[in-house]
Image (cartoon, rainbow, N blue to C red):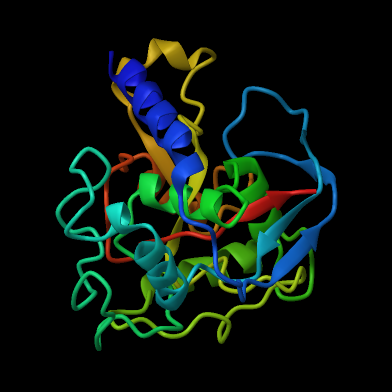
Length: 260
């Protein structure tokens, strides 16, 4: 029943996206990601996942960018959003519906947004949230290597980043970790939503696990590894598995992708 409820909610959200107001000129920079193969961290197979090429926003979506969205689409404002789509902390760091304030710098990543709001924003700009495998594929890049998933030094670096996640007000996007794809802050700034339900494979048939059917997962540095010593990946998957679609957390934001 939980799974069915979320499917129905997502269907309503998707159907309603056609009435979203037209997007004003966007300053989003899209980075082209080539096709390739990726080994997921949790898997019941040693075969890699094929990743088709796509575009990803170079940074997380900022407060200023999301402000344009809520101004154009009033139903996603803090005072208007339905409780089924976001909990009470939605955009809680903003001063008001359309006023950012000191705790939400315009060029800092928008946080305290639900999966539903993040999905609606991506639809508004002609994109979508990344599938977890796509997100991990990009996040497996270190500063100078596009596939660093099996490097112990990279995992150790990520753990140190997670110990010192920034506090509110957050720093600006695009000023910290830039990886080999020229994508910023896949690690160390905020966690990020992804599109897919039940992405952590906990059995050979996810339908066996009724208690996770209503959950969605975010990403903040998946480096896709089947190595049990990769503690940074365990930290991330623990975070993902604790979330539900309406959650709005202080260190949870998003970025968008587009198909080629």
